[in-house]
Length: 355
Image 1 (cartoon, rainbow, N blue to C red):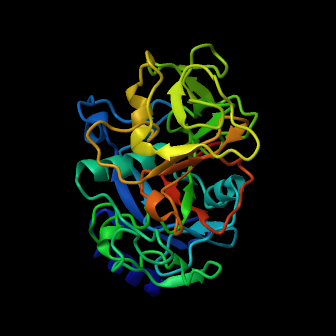
Image 2: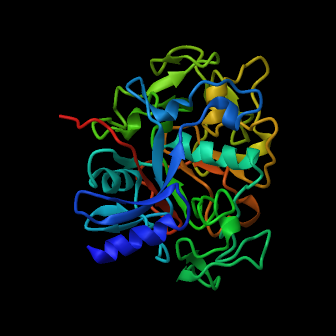
């Protein structure tokens, strides 16, 4: 159709890594190609190994196409479009379903890819700002988006996708990915806490439509301090512990204090530390679960409860103000959580058709 041809031409003008991808209904999403990265691309002193999030069933993918914008939902499917109110108030399973319904290769953006984008921005000195103060940037108040939803009596809230300045894009250019910082937290796939144990889907397999991320799934794996993956519940796996009862989180291999009741443990992400004697593998840094040594973090907050199953959303929201940042992560809610400040983002990779 001519209108879609015109859209494709307009999107191509953003940059060669931007294109329109159509789903099973033939409807468009604006996507940004993210080439496979290595540990060296995002971690000081990292190796040339490809980051695991680009590997599906042992096969490396050259590129993953990430939604340029936080998504909306139409026809029960996720779409990446500019200048719209991002979908919020949906739980993890609803976000996952809206992505997968688009067809083979469509998936909920992986935790590891979100983290890689923020670490890449750190290394390239293009840390994205965003809507972190009810329609404007908390640290740069002159930077504003177009309000699409007002929260209570604050005068602002969510803003139209991509309506902010280029500093709200991950590479500080129109070719980049918008709104990774602020606006809405984003559910991400392939990672969870289960009774404090850090668990992932190996490695980029959460991109597969047949991958189960259900609470009882046997595809979840735990991580040892040497970076190896083992069965959940294995002794000596990495966990989020609390320094004191209800106190600040830390990374350990056992639980000395467990959150309960109305406790919401948190600390600045830059201050997250390991228990003495516990090694931190590079995969944990690449997951955005431990500070990178040369990165510059602001108030980006790390929230985590270590009781029950906790599913992550990342990037902070419009109301996080001094605690906001692209590296912020929340691990203090169950998969059933819904809120006006939590949305999602789909991604796409060319995968073999699954039977």
